[in-house]
Image 1 (cartoon, helix red, strand yellow):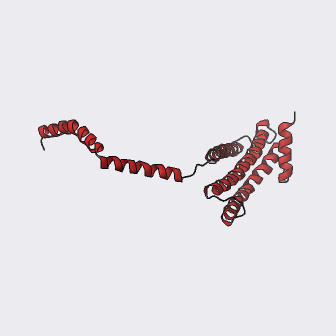
Image 2 (tube, helix red, strand yellow):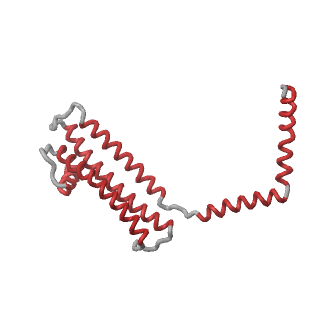
Image 3 (cartoon, helix red, strand yellow):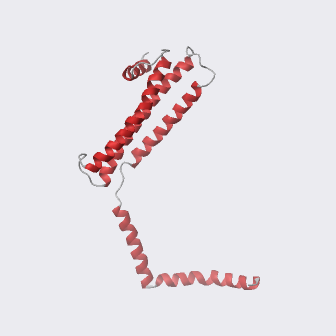
Length: 185
């Protein structure tokens, strides 16, 4: 095909194609097909239930991501050259590590609870005491507990760094100590 023929075909298509599409859309069968397609899409949208938990899960995922970034930054700073436990910045990092790890665990537990509620809403379970809900809830709770082990270490060792202890104390004592030190004037 030479350039002249290409130019003629291009000009013809530009002029005639909109007319052909308009004529096709004017046909009753085409209008019926379009209406059926739109109705099918609307019906599919109506079938899917609204997800009232999505924004909460997105918020918790964002907060958890922030907490993990802070934890990674604290570990990076603790591995730096300032390893003197009596430096104010070093002890502050211990407090940050302990408290942000606890917040990360709270986000994980909240996300697990919201996921179970979302499952119940999506599948019309009115009670927590149905096997699918118990199964999913138990699995998510187990994951939150396993994640809590790492949090316990971060909280305990963060409190030990904060208070210049030679070894960490228990988890409850560490949490109480973190809150007391944070709000003490």
